[in-house]
Image (tube, rainbow, N blue to C red; front, side, top):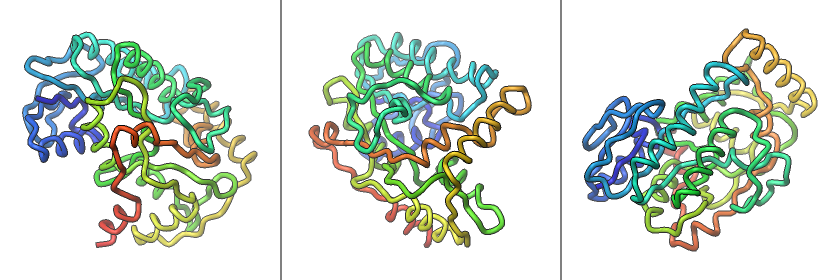
Length: 300
């Protein structure tokens, strides 16, 4: 029996469905029922999950977003991503745990043109990166397998591609700085890794599509697949950073829980971030899904 936390969400839902399709008995842990299997209520911000009868845990539950520093939303994020992890690991009691983290834990001050798992984790630009780093440190110390995907996309995505599409204004999409190479992770690739990883040696593993993408071309393909006509224009990086600092200052002054633009968002789009997936591949995992596969299904 496999337990999947956050199974009512995007990543957790895909993991739960993939597990059930593979013949596993699935327990969905969360505030709302998952798409398959048994539902056991668990609020990751409080209390301990019921893992009776469970043999393996895949922890996908997480608070996401880009809240202003010191905001109530940041405190809520820590309650889920850090303290929720503590309670989950205590309840697991030595059971295999696969903890879904994020490439946002990697230090953005270092070169990320090819990032292996030994890249330093520090200097994160927002609460999400900091709390995911703190949560995964607990998981690693407990002997869990930690997966680090980057920019997860796919059917049911409510964050990455929808946010990109919402940034189109008057037929124009502004992107910070010149074109760069970026790793993305199809949610199906992440789900495959999450189900296989319970048998991997403890430690951290990058998970991404087989090849990185050119940012501008990938964005053009996304826009085209969704029927959005827009020109891509490059905003000077210095201007983008200044705008992000101003937006964060306004949010921090109480004018909004989440800034309209942040240093984290600028960083994620303006610098090459390519994940080295050799460690996961050495365990027999192979990414079988690509952005083109996903967009082909969107166009239908």
